[in-house]
Image (tube, rainbow, N blue to C red):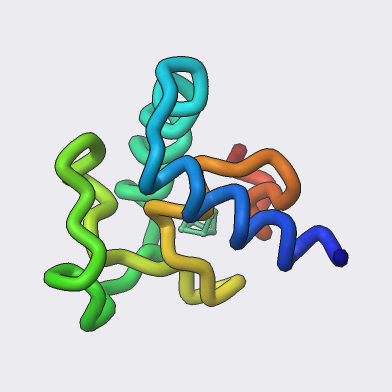
Length: 84
Ligand code: SF4
């Protein structure tokens, strides 16, 4: 399994089944993403609500294409601009 696939699986698992440590890191990353011009709207807002981290709900990273609610909740991939 390559790292990108592992990141997607882990990110969505942690999105569906949140745990405290992951959420703490996710909040820190999300505040950086929310201020980044590469965070762009998708059609996913209704499909993938993020009640825990509203600031990135429905957004994706236009650099890597990842849905941010999953991206910030995994350990295999970092920010493509090295912001986190
Ligand atoms: S992952 Fe990095 S490049 Fe992508 S939106 Fe977040 S801060 Fe910006």
